[in-house]
Length: 216
Image (cartoon, rainbow, N blue to C red; front, side, top):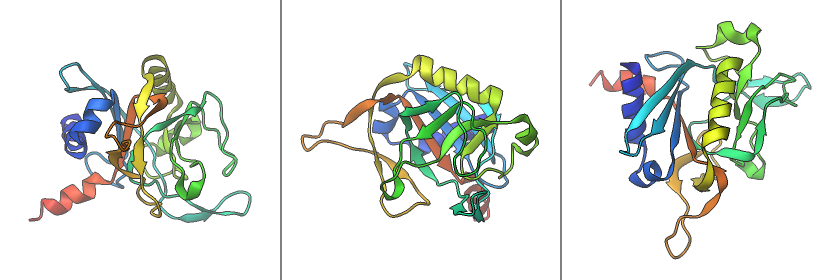
């Protein structure tokens, strides 16, 4: 039932053009509680246009505050909402966060440059001693999975979805929202394409909205 709910919410969030031009969709609900909270749902688009569910996994998104990292620097631990593409130049089987000194196995960084700099936000695995926190807000902003699930997703993306991909229109000046899911076009109306992965990630805070709407 929750997978069906996530699928419908994803459908409702996508434009017809966006649905037509990506082949793997990853929906993450960063809500603190609720039926979809702290879950990742992975869907593959079929030839019919239907979204077939592949995976439903617990995740940890950001702690949603401002903190000091081990190097004494102030850092936001917010996971922004919005749509993201994956950066084909920043896909790492082994990676360690330079800010938090934490292991990030099977890291897939987002292709987003808030303030003109590559984001440090990624989907990645986490060591086993963090597994008990999956399903709650526990990361420094990234989307954490178990290492096994992160490897499954990493291998799926790399093996099947590398393709020329339309470019998302990212927002400027609002670090809390990355993109509204609109695609860039050239002056003659053609989609702007780039090397990448035919994968679209939606991070949302859906459950609280659902609970509020149920009151009316």
